[in-house]
Image (cartoon, rainbow, N blue to C red):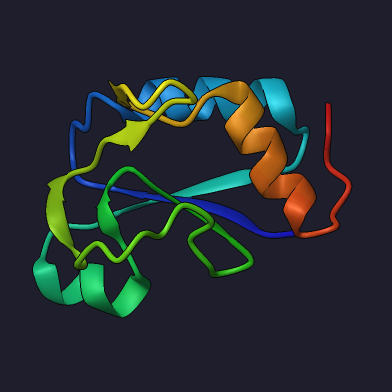
Length: 101
């Protein structure tokens, strides 16, 4: 399983996402700084931060690629800076992949 997080420089939502991923998996998570809309489109970043599992965004909901801030919805529909631990666990599990810490 390949986990990558795409983000803009100094993204305040990067740390919460990485912390929550650390609670869910022991897999290595790579990060990539994206600084242009062209790179966002090339790498598939639909706002910062974007998690890719094996190159696919498990939280894709039709967002346009770009270097903007990205917010997620929690289980109650509230806007949050990163998916919850449970949402991340479900995303990883949906790939049929083992990786839980």
